Amino acid sequence: MQEKYIERKLVAAVKKMGGMAPKFVSPGLDGVPDRIVLLPMGKIAFVELKTPGKKMRALQVRQKDKLESLGFSVYCIDRIEQIGGILNEIQST
Picture 1 (cartoon, helix red, strand yellow):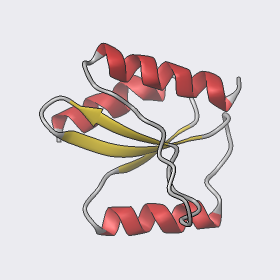
Picture 2: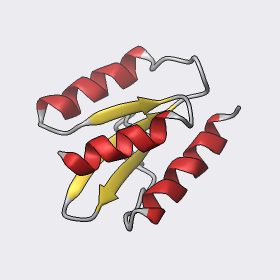
Picture 3: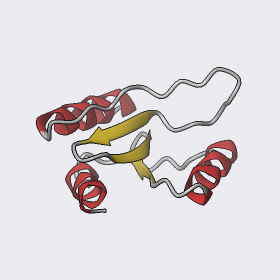
Picture 4: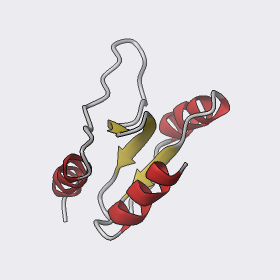
């Protein structure tokens, strides 16, 4: 299964919940997560997508740690089965 397939499933699931999941592109700031998940009621989190079994690179982990130190949630999804649980967690925080 390819990362792009998982990414499309995430975007569709977020849209179904009434939210949006735009690509996160930050010129000059490498290693940022792939998507910003925006759900109703002001819920926000960042998501890095990976091919099944792949891990985040060291730079991505550093960016994740920086975002979390600012109080944001950052998730890494490498399986479609994770999407529902993670979105429920974002929505409930």
